Image 1 (cartoon, rainbow, N blue to C red):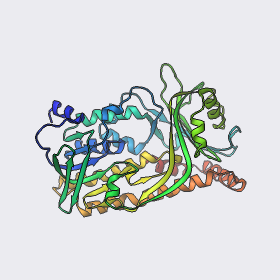
Image 2 (image 1 turned 30 degrees about the horizontal axis):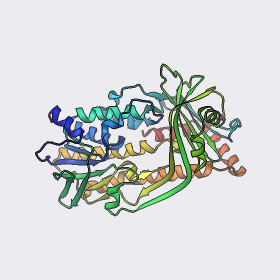
Image 3 (image 1 turned 45 degrees about the vertical axis):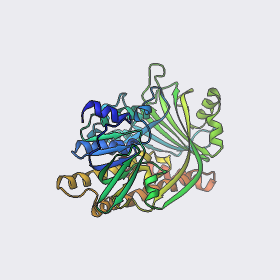
Image 4 (image 1 turned 30 degrees about the vertical axis):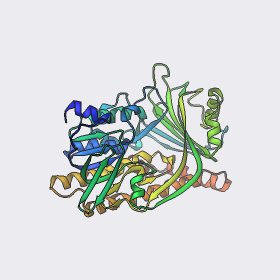
Length: 416
């Protein structure tokens, strides 16, 4: 595709002639959908990416407080897709994870679990800013041959046994062998396909933001369990203005979390400090915007329909207690890509019933186990029952004392 044509499509202004058919049409240009497009484009498949929003508009230059923890398996995928090397800012490795239990304003329990550098042989994950990932994805989408980006655009999709047809709001259309629904928790494609959804509300809301702190984090993360919900601190790369920075994901009861998020900076900072269970970071200063997200788990009854498959949040959503939400979406496409690349190389149908069934068999059982595990963790730890408190403290202390068990937890969380 010529550079001028690619630029006009990215801005939602299309040439007069019709669009060519593609192997795969991905609906949703978020991290999972866009990464999948980049990886498939590099493998020689033709891909169309549709989104209702203008992608360039997502590259806001200001630090907005949101960041992703990327595990080792997804990091390798992003490298293979050409995305990792396009990041405009360095990532921050997570080399230690401290897991503690306590109450606000009190020191953490003396029984704890710590994952150390020697448990993994490499970082447990890497923290990258949400805006940095967006810039890298946009760069790769524009530079990778075989990818057509259509955004902002509205489209309707007709799926039949022999293929799919995508009709754009400007009257033009194109064919696709496979439609990938990467359109989020409220997936319209999932709903149109009649795929049932089960939701598990938690009565919790997460506060997400960035903080500057007095002392360096030494690439260490914290998961501190509190009666109203878990509090996570994740290390980030600093700036000239704030050399020591972290991201926080603070879960609290619905209504309460929104009130905390609206507090003045100084008051909010003291509330953050009271929930860390430790003084290792010193004084805290909020940086940038604060975001609130109602928390729930959800899962689709199936991941496929005729010429359609679901990935990422369209297929599943879990509690952020283990930082696995986005990584779970990346695990979907890590399993999907070899199926599509092999079928394409052999001249087979990338939207066949057999391929879709194989994808679901690879992904859904493991995803359901992860959902069950995070759901159980939240219900076990987000309470103040003294018997449960003692049991969970003894449990995490026991895992801490068994290196082989620690390493098994680590490998699974890293996606290796």
